[in-house]
Image (cartoon, one colour):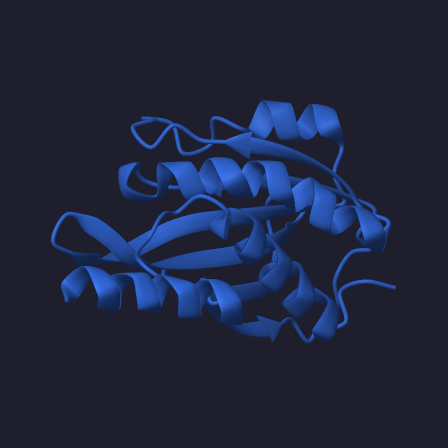
Length: 167
């Protein structure tokens, strides 16, 4: 009986296109923001979200591209002792802004991650002033984290567009 119910649930999920649920809350600085032509993206995930962060790294450039934004991704080592390890690479890229995506917490069920929260900030090109900040909560369907990075990137960039960060 469990197998039949499990198969039915998977079929329903496949038919309805269920997947991760992403809720993004954000705030834009009242002082304006830089023109986004070149964005350096720093992904600071954790051991529990490693496969999703790798997927984000592939997805963000593709999702930014239709908005006329060139981007470069840097994935930080979760065990890095230097929180600024990416700065020299970012400086060489000469970005208009730096988008930092930082994993902050996970919801676990048994030994699987079923949810994650990320703090997302958009800084000026010198990684100084924060122009935009978001909290992104993601609930997984429990099957796998793969593919969720693309959905996350789409939701973050859609929220940035909704907040007026693109021309």
